[in-house]
Image 1: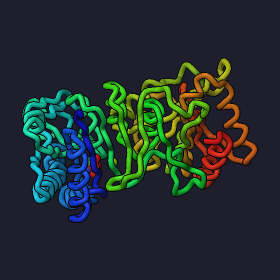
Image 2: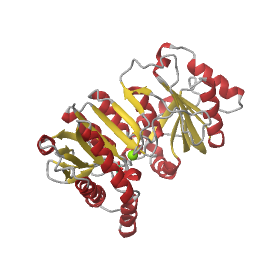
Image 3: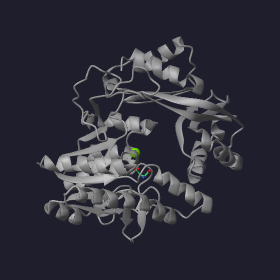
Image 4: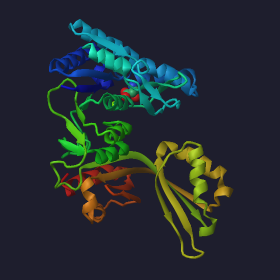
Length: 403
Ligand code: ASP
Ligand code: MG
């Protein structure tokens, strides 16, 4: 039997009992004959607590020092878990990200993994040990500690699975799988047996939260079968893999939604005054992320406009940037709207089924929900709607497409 990588998130290692349960699960995998690597997050909400401490001391803390601080969370868990496994009579060894050979670029707070030197992990596995690795952290070539972005332990797990040639990577978490929509709000949401990489990537990017988007990207690039399952339960989870799924009839595989969105409409007296590049360059320079962009060109000398959506929390900063650069951008007027939400349907089957978008707009219209913006990809349709209508919109889409 081959290598397996198991990853446990913060809630699943949040206290002593859960660390012991995690140790037992790792041992069960080992006893099945696998070589076992366990990647863990910081216990419970400890990363949030560390962020909070830093904010009280210095709201503009250097990002290098933030990484120095946040990387300690995972180091606590690895030591405790290795001790728990040893206590059950099995050999284990814990490694920090750098001991496990995770080399990253030197971008503090959001580094990408560049390379994994698996010497230590490989040797420990050969010696029959269960290897426990700290998620979310690595080392740059200059020897600086880096972190991979919030939720980044998933990515550590998948990257290690790829580097080790593992047969599977299981993300063990506080939900039992990937759902068609958020079961807390959508009455008919159900657990999926399977989903393909591209669909999962869209859902993760749309804020489905269950997986770090970069982890899905990695799994896709290296063709690692990825499982999302409940920690410490026997129930099977959801498999994320390449195409050819059993439930092929389904056009839409998931419905995602995200609140607290705002829209800015920048209008111009005429099209030749319109410096769209300048808008988005200035916003990018100030690290304001925008999402959907819609441009409309007026006839001849008529009004033209660019509308875009962004997080409500970034609205004030975006307005400051736009006003500061008004002359360079060349705009005439600016309107904002907040209290919006984005609802999206995702499914690989859309590629070969025309009319999915039309059907979505029709049901929303029949439900009296006004659509403010639209964006599509081959396997996704997103609409921006009033926030108060978000759940209703998601619910009708879920019903209509029989997700
Ligand atoms: N502990 C980190 C966080 O809370 C990384 C992770 O949990 O994946 O974001
Ligand atoms: Mg997570």
